[in-house]
Image (cartoon, rainbow, N blue to C red; front, side, top):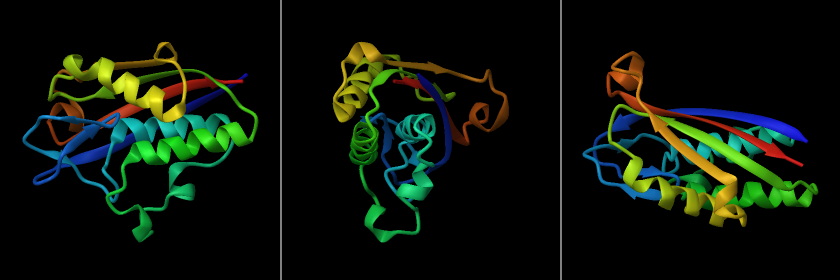
Length: 155
């Protein structure tokens, strides 16, 4: 068994959609990034890549490469899943936490879990997604952006 941890952060930006776990969340701002800036999916990808000692998303999907401009992060997550499968790994579980003062994410969690599971070809019961705030502290508490942590276990 191997454990991986991923972390990502993106700042809010006007004129962009807010995408978390492949789900468009109604909000007045989205996140800034080269791709769709899906901070949750990026953290999950880094956890999976780290567990398999395959580097990180910057190595595989560099933000300077125009091929990834605006790309759906679930597409990249599917590629990460294929990389793990090629190495003979099976995903046991993923546990992720989104850190955001706004918007409230509870109504979207089950859809997010399903999108991540579908992208990886695993059962939804292997994917946990939670959301929390930082009680007004730090950059997320000041509503400047969103962060996400993810851990995973692969065999």
